[in-house]
Length: 519
Image (cartoon, rainbow, N blue to C red; front, side):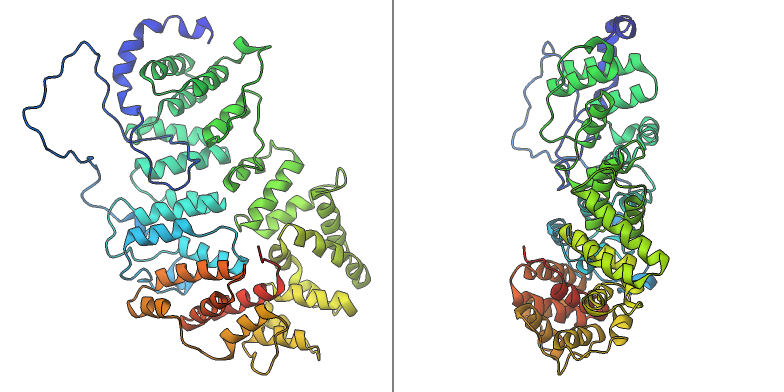
């Protein structure tokens, strides 16, 4: 730390400590995501100097529960959503009689590496504007679980849109909002909200960061020393903040060691001191930081692929990355860039022969990174309309079945091939009389051949008006079933059909048969 910034401030250390006690750390957060930066926390009591004696209590045996502070009135956070009922087609009372804690537990437990349609159904449940659970309170336990799962998926934009509907800043929602801001380059805005809303209780590292971002270097340095003195900033974080505040003092010094589990705040601080962290081994939400314009093209490509795989960005954004410029090298992501650009050029030129030649390579490249459905969203309808010959035509047909126009593509296909007839039957809901070609196909076929009985647990949930819980359980079963439990596949697809989600059932069935997702 340079003496010019701190020398005149050290005598004020104890005064500052008194004023900053509300920014200390406290109870563990409710979030299931362990990389949240804990940028705000429940205020803890300021430690008293050891010279002040505390008389023993006059009574014993009293339980002191934590005090929760919240408005006496106001809307439930659990009612916040982005997708109205008219858009989702889901009943407004979807959550029914299921307790908030159970819904939150199930949502946090859902896997992010699900089949694309199942992943899309999860997104719908996370973003839907629904009536709160019957036991919902102002803490918004279900709301926070929905936000955390969006962060798990790397879907920061919709998570931010939900959080910005919280009318009065609260610590737990703000913690998540602050981390999203750090990952998307909006930290100055988050710091401004923090300065204007002391009730969100920023931690010392977050306060140091925001004071420095606002140009108040003296206050930032004082806050750092205060936090160290009070034990609220550990040695590793202090060393990082010191380099952030005054990098000139550390010229020629060895780099800091790479943190084992960096938070979004640490990620930005490491970047600021010239030691940017690779995000490929970090949770997928960190990939959003690599989409910023200051990142290199290869970094943005790899981040875009990770985020497209979880449905966090639209296929067109991925296409924009693939076609940004000419490939700079060979191997890895560059082969996908070349293959996509070759196919894109052939389609733009209207040359079916060139499309037929370039399609297999492009498909193979997208299969390698499990991006077949984003690829189908981009090209499926156009490829199916070209009437390509032979193997290229058969491949184009299958790609078309993975697009939103799956039923139109299926009805336009005339074939005597038993496998294609089975696929057409699934896509059109008319699989009777068709023959599956493997065990997965048989499990899928059983769900469409007749409306068989649901398993007792799913049937009981529907009878008890716990549809949302039933759908979450179905998402989990189909995801696990894709890895081998074929009975779960049949049960899950039957449930989707039973509750009117026919399109989701058909698309999921097609993905189970056409995609290799066996673990």
